[in-house]
Image (cartoon, rainbow, N blue to C red):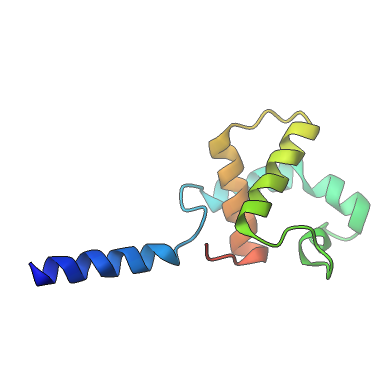
Length: 102
């Protein structure tokens, strides 16, 4: 019984610091970003557009903020992505630029 309790506690602890977008697929997200986001970001920030994610005064400061920003772009640009597609993009951007752990 004690072993089961310790395993459960360990599992909860590990999940607390897990990837916040574990349901997403970063490879799919990368393809979606390259197809739908880079052109706009590059026109505003130059280069390959990644400066939008790395600039000093970036708007996104949390994993919730990242998902909210993705949803905002999705809505404003009429891309009609489903929630799972937004999670793919969030996972890719988080792994590549943001590194949020919760």
